[in-house]
Image (tube, rainbow over all chains, first blue to last red; front, top):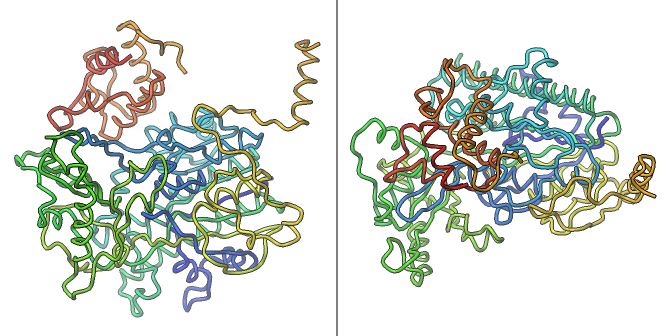
Length: 532
Length: 99
């Protein structure tokens, strides 16, 4: 029996969820259990991080803090070394805030965190278990905590297959690529057994470990929506589908039908006293055009392309998702498609390449004007908002953020390829991240209020801690949505604020024992003869 | 924290710890490598590393040696490009300079 069950649904959006939970001709109700959840509980849209992307958004869900404080902005971490850029991936150690898994652990709660991004290496001082998401199978054992859990799963879970469960880098890259009909169907279908694997892990943990705070994330929603959005968006689903389109629709429905079964089973296993919460890191919508941002910046003189020597390595590099530029000749560029960000290279010393510090503001204002001037062939503006980092990413890690973050008209991600024209229309609409995700509550003490006003992504963490019986750290940036709970339950469980979160190095398991725990410890020590 | 991760480790101890890390790292891989790892063993050519594995190895080394944010770019990049392969000896020499 858990006190709190948290189910993450990567990229889940009401646009799709509403369709899956209503009676449709020839399809019935794809997610009947989720329908009952939505009818009996309370839900809201959930505003994502300023760049609605998996790593910063899930980091905010797990810390209750924004990217400016937790320090993660993208999948890829880039360090400007003056003459060149060093590329690597963000990992859990880059998160400069305490995880809710650690906060709950040091106050005696047992936790399980399954398939969450940026939980590898496993956060320190966890009382319970972590099986990280977004980690290749080859590295899953090493990053599973406790280490022996991996072997227990192999031994005890029938059909457990790390390769089927884990993130496959080359496969997942295809989420953002244009695939053939056959490849698209295969790619979508590939995610069905992955999700089954994560469900089996979650089922196993619930049955055997009995965590107070049980959390699992299903990420097939995001992946499938990237490639199969045209078969899920009610405005795009073909009225008279071709055989292939029908098969695509069917495999998508199969995914969501399976997901509904997993959710129902986990809720049952958590027990009748568990409060259940659902959240996604961002929503989804249709992207209809592509902006080749570095090609645009090159046209304007901000970017200089690296000379290609035609070698195999150079060709591979140019096809990658990292910007490959002549750094000395570049003053403003986009590092990765997923960042939707523009970095300005500021000269560290006089004579260095880049923008002189005293010219930074005027340079940036001109750059912003240039960005707003972008339009497509119909004359429509491509960029609808340009976010300055000091306004949108306040905190000690603001310097890690792009100087500017773009919001495109269709919420799409930019391309960093060296192609012309700068803006093109997609042949087929692709799924892309929308800033509004989902946040839902269900179970004892939860009001049956239906849809309430939009919440912020940093509201998830305080809500989970409150549900599991803990005070909300006063430095959290979010709030517990009172409207999620019944008045009676809130009267018995008022929201209380407690001490700040622990900075790295301050965290010690077992701190903040309550008086009863202290008494028990003293008694045990007396029995062992350690105290007089 | 690994007890071996102390300042001024002897080069032999660094190599031994690095090999132990790599053996643990590759324990359940489908690798064709059947020999004994030594300073000449190469990550890509011998151990079938891919680029994602090198990133994970950086994390593993930092964890096992108890050091955060070692300047791996000095080891991994040369003339603005990533090196094609690395031997255990090269990594060990790099660590000897940093620890």
